[in-house]
Image 1 (cartoon, rainbow, N blue to C red):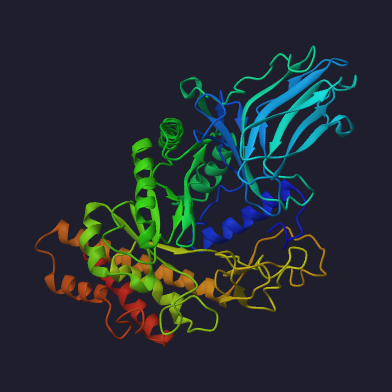
Image 2 (image 1 turned 90 degrees about the horizontal axis):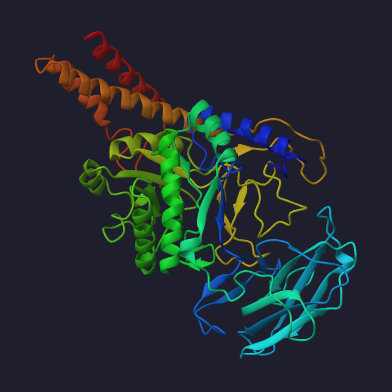
Length: 550
C-alpha cells in the first residue's frame, strides 16, 4: 500500500489500510492480519543482551555464551547491551570481551556508540574495532583514553561479521565475559555491565506486554468492523514450510530449552488472558508453519504441543498440502488445499470440535477449481458451494494484493499489475532475477489505483479497485450464507415439531443436498452461471417456505 499509493506517513497508511479493510468487510472477507499495524509490544525485563542466543555450546566460562549469527546479505545483524551506559569525560575506559568465530580468520566487529546529553547520536566519538577471529576463545579490548565532553552515554554493539554499509558479510561468532568500565590501566577496568558473563537468571525475568496499540486495532477491526478471525502474530515461535524450518527463539533462549518454555508460558498465558477478558478469544488462529511435509511432522507436532502447554485455549492452525492422520490431530483448525480435501475425514472428525477450512493458491491448475483470471468465472462462485457440501467452515487465500514480486522486480521499479496480470514466484529459494510463474491473478483480487507506478507520483488516499473475481467470490460467499440459512431452518423446523410437514422437510433437504448438475467434485462442475442462479432461487424459495410454516 505504501509503495503503490505513494504514502509518506503512518497516518496516511492507517487511513488507506482502513479503507482496504472496509472493502474486505463489505466482501464478507476477513484480512489475515488486520492488526499488522497494531502489534502487541513485548518486553522481557531482566535480560541484558538483545539479538543473540544464549547457548551452552562451549562457553568461555560458566554455563553459557552468547551466539550471534548473521545469515543476511542485505543487513548487519548484531547483539546489543540492553541500555545506554553513563560515562564521564576525560576518563579512560576499557571494553573487554572473549570471542570465538565459527570460521578461522572470520572478521567480526565491536562498536562503542556515543550520545550527547540530549540522547542524540555523536558519531565522531564512536570507537570501533574489527577483529580477525579464531576458532578458540581469545580476549580482545577497545581502550578509550577519554570520551569527549559532549559524550554522556554510550551503547555497546557486537557484530559477528565485518560491518559494512550493505551488510553483505555473513557468519557466526560467540561472545562471553564482556566487561566495560573506567580503567586505571590495562586490565584494571571496573565492570559497569550486568550479565556480562551471559549467565541469565530466568526466574528473575518478567514478560510485560504493552497492549495499547493492539487494543486500538482490535476494537476497530474485531469489534466495530466485526472480523471474526485473525492471524495472531506471536514472538518467539518456530517458523517454516516444506522448504525450510527454524526453531523458535524468545529472549535469547532457543525452543526446547527449559528457559524458553518458562518464558513462553508466561508470555502466551498473558496473551490468552487478555484476549479472553476483551471477548476476542476464539477469533485468533496461530498460523506459524505452512504446508509441512512428512519430514516436518515431528517439528510441527512439538511446536503445537509447546503452544498447548503454555496456553490451552489459544487456537492452533495449520495449512496442509499433504493432509492425513499423522498431522491432522495437532491443531484446532485444519486448512487443506482444496483439491486434497477428503469429505469423509471432515465428516468423521468435525463432530469432535475440529474445524476444517480449505485454501486455493498457485496450484493445481485446470480442470480443478482455481482462482486465476484466465479460468472459468464459475470457479470462485462454486468454491463456497462445494465447501458447504464438504462440511468446511472457512476459506483461505494466501494474499489479495500480490502486486509485485521482489525476486523479479526491484523495489524502485515494481510490477504494474494493471498491465501485467502474472503473479511471479517469490521466496522458496528462488534466486533474485530468476523468473518463475504462479499464475495470472494468483494472490491478486484487489488492485491499487496508481496504474503507472514507474511515473505516477500522485498520492492516493483511497481504497482498492475491485476485480471481477472479487465480486464473484462475494456472490459465492453469500450463496454459502443462503445454504447455511436453509440448513438452520431445516434443523429448527425438525426440532420445533417432530410432526412437521415431512413432505416439505424432505423437499428442502433435497435442495440442500445440491445436485450433480452443479458439481460432482472440484474437477467436475458447471461452467454455466445460469445453472447456479436458478438453483439459488430454489434455495431462497425453500427458506421462505420453511419460514412461513412456523
